[in-house]
Length: 321
Image (cartoon, rainbow, N blue to C red; front, side, top):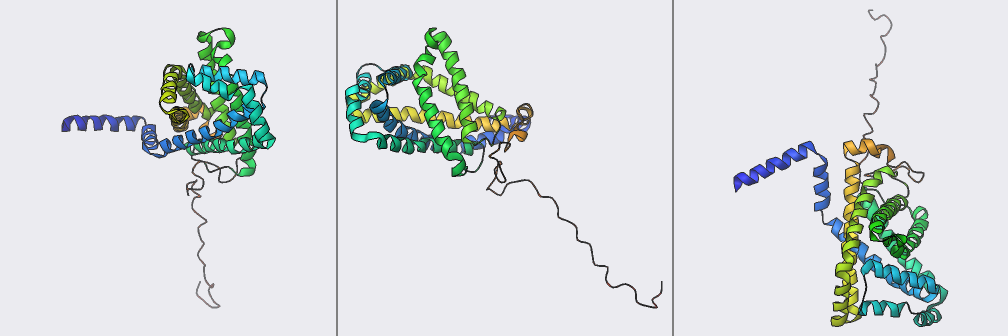
């Protein structure tokens, strides 16, 4: 047993020597902060989704509500009681009641409160790249734009997954490409352009792979789980099931962005992606916006000027030469 442990330790030491990125990667993944961040992100996503769903049901045109219903069915494969509950929420009669109750002020408040999800996603991206928080005056409009863009992406999930009528063989590769573009743009926008596009590509591809895999498996698990939870616990069961799925999704995104940021700094990839030149290269980047800012890390200022010793008074009159 000891010989086997020693052998494995030697293999790991050799791998670290050949691939130094493994040390940082394992250290980042082993910390509990990533899972905590993913859980907080999932909670904010759920708290943002509920008021936005009711706002769409109350104020969106009938065609938009139908498109949202079709997209949610495509995402989760809804059927049976859970599908009936969703139809009840998006029903036009219920929408009229909500519209009379909440009004336009309710929609504005829903959007403002939903930006907490944008802020949580921005913090996930900043922690992945070890950057400080953006100033509110720079980031505030980005939170709202990202949230509205994400809502549009959700609305288009049905047509995209169906390949715009071509079927799943076209739909899922297209879904992967759309996801990669969305997560690449998400990082660039919420990081306030402090990291260039190419270094963000590994994280975007990993996030797209994770969301595509979860998108393929969700219709196999979520519908039955939702219907069982609804039958056993009522609406509260729906909350627990959807929150569990969101935790898995958001944890996958958190790990993907972090692994992508570590890989982008690996020397070989860094040369191809231009990571060092791309960090803090955007117009919003300024002093203290690079990696390690605010943590005491930074370039060595180098030695200061060497003091010149005072030669003292010169030789007085009559001193020997």
